[in-house]
Image 1 (cartoon, rainbow, N blue to C red):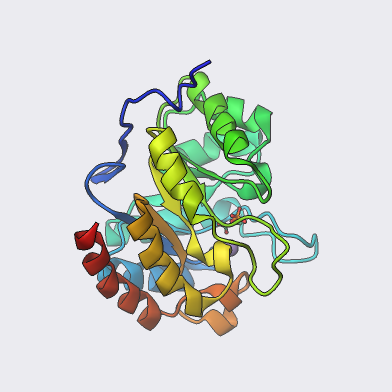
Image 2 (tube, rainbow, N blue to C red):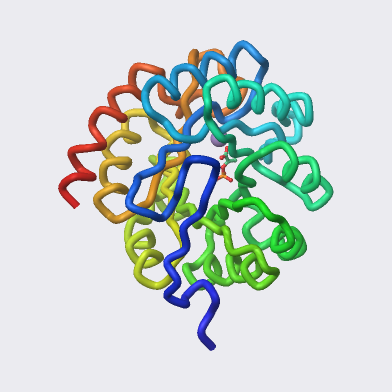
Length: 263
Ligand code: PEP
Ligand code: MN
């Protein structure tokens, strides 16, 4: 059976003025978690000035420990939306459960499905009814078929605005947070018509590796990147150890065009 995800349709996802899956390369950047108005405004001004196209920020955070910061929830969403408006950036944020969909659909431009929820089929089915783009992260140990079939749940529900996101998988390697599967990016581009985004932040967990892996993702044919940037990583309430400083993010944005021109 040929999947909807496999039919050669050349999906382009439209987010305001931004098009994902077309000739342009789209960079989504911002903090792991929204922590307050000042932090998000600062992050938004940094990523906008460096040339990012979409502002990221989690308000519902899937944390490994129930005692860790769980995100600001709905108030954080309004703070994120205001920062996006001020800097002319559409916003992306994670939806963790179906009950959050009406709020997320009304307030965000892209709904992110986190790695831990890739096989939450009732959530995926509910997102099939949404009229906003969905960015579907690959599960921590999902095969490529499982990833495509998860996208199929959303497409089958009638929402064709789906992007795939490779964010690293769990392997025997422990030195890095995850193992970035770049062959999966090239495979997904050949096998499906859906745009493919790479998240080198969660894939490596190491700010020193985000630049080389971003360049490699661009060379592998990715349609864009999802990157964690924090104005003060050492003060971050979530994933500060992997956040790029504004300076490092600017360097990355300066280095990308050479690779994009070469492929
Ligand atoms: C995130 O983007 O902050 C996140 C929680 O990512 P993942 O679902 O890939 O772990
Ligand atoms: Mn994170």
